[in-house]
Image (cartoon, rainbow, N blue to C red; front, side, top):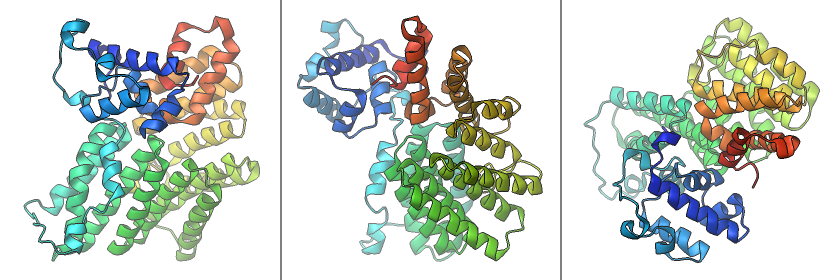
Length: 417
């Protein structure tokens, strides 16, 4: 869980202010400087606010080198700066999934494939591993991405090995591996790490196919569609989603789990069409998803998709905002009670209501919704381009009358860079 403003250590805040000062002196935006470091702009924003401490010397040296200053200029000795030294704490962990992204860059089970005698530890049961996967998804839905990374870097290599060499439970282990990669794909999408999300989704598809579970294959395709959307590869996103929809319809999806996947894929198609400004097609897909949700009759969480009437309504709000129908979005959204859904879904609804109010020039209402969204899903406000665009628009409309609260939000989101 990200530390709150009260948890920011003085030395970390001072360090971040120095990084920001040197960056601005070079007239470099957060996005440009973060790209030069191979990091995300949200990570740099957290560093500059003191929310994300930099404890590793190699990262500290990299920042100093990129700025053309010494490490001592960025982080003076405690006696010189008058700052107390602080030992790393659990809140010092990165929230950018860096370790997990590095893990995906290689192959977690090469030792098994090359028969290097990599020891196989079967001390843990499948039930224990399944609980870890459940925890991984719970952390992903809650936006606690530092903990997602911590769990994934130990869990993935174990599962990759076991799914290949275990004499029993191979199908179940492959299925659990697919679920783990699906969670990571969802987490990477939230961090706007679309390339890593695509890799994770592709591996989820492969593991699900190996398990012989076609519905998990389709659920993995859903994650891939969202990675394609973040990559702005809308043609690929539409093809992937429509192929899965056609296959499920041909199969005759009638049980609740299959309907959840089918409905979710229709929602992903609505997203694709809305981003393409294809109004009729987007609304048609929302209508189909709504019909499927009515068949189910209640909110479900099959395959961690959170599909049901409430999620369809949330997606209808998002689609309306993307299409510029702010009034429709507010009419739908203000009647939604999303308390039973994950913080991610609740945050998405508030973000889209904020965007809708911004389109209607309701500055106070827009700011209120965006602040509330940030409180429960901060990475969404920091990484979602539409949210940042809405904040930027609010600042421009307010001009010199922009409140300090709005300017602070814009700074935290990097909306003005």
